[in-house]
Image 1 (tube, helix red, strand yellow):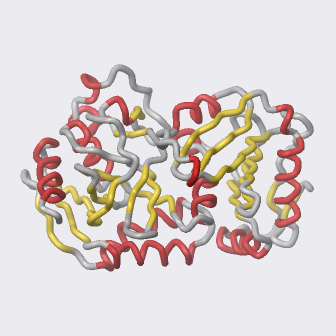
Image 2 (cartoon, rainbow, N blue to C red):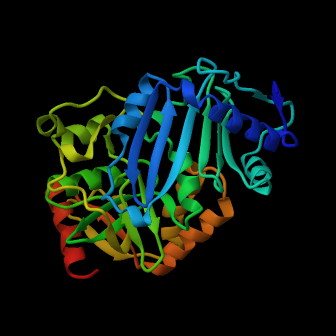
Length: 348
């Protein structure tokens, strides 16, 4: 298939999944990760993505009774008989129509047209395939949070959801930090960590609402722009750090600044929306569910392909489950961390 349309999309998805699995004996690398309630196996070639996956995740405590499994094949034409990726046809490409067409066939997927980069997932068989033109022909964001889409689909089938948010906590209790880029979310997480608080992640965390709202760790990477990197004095704290990434930020591992081992979960007691106020002292004030929803939902829905309606419904339920607050950030990291710690210890 050289040109894909909505009509042929489900057949192409099954074709890619079958071709990626049929080449199972030809992948030189198998990476494994133990994640919350999920044992992940990734079959792929050598290269940048293999190195990224090797360091990407925070291992979950072993709990065989609660674990499922998922296999992901990172395929390209240099592996076995894997075909070259097809291109989208002449018809207009629409993310929502794409997701709905696959959902009708019981599948999930995404497509990045600039690279003819395809991802397909079968939630019933717990198998996914990523098809690229070559070993390193993936979008730049895929290196920072590899397999994000597959984890989103796999956990969504289990009633949980990847959420674009940060976390801070103490004593097993914590807050969820939501906001668009530039709101101060990542800097707040790092400020908390270097001043004694815990976190289960910055960019993407796993949220479960089964009994109460809990956040669990997945990805180990933290990021800071050069100004935040300087203000938080991270150059003096980190043994190593990477050059600026595609977003113009430094990336580093959470364990390099965490005061303790990463907790297996945080019981979330509130949703906070950080805001750079320009004031010297941090303050916390109640905000409406609507404002909290605007901070939490759009980026989480856009960055997690498919299930748009389910995503908005899930995030709406989060803002009903949790009290919502605006955190106006002061200028000193230690003071910011202290205000959040006092809030958590006081029970919100």
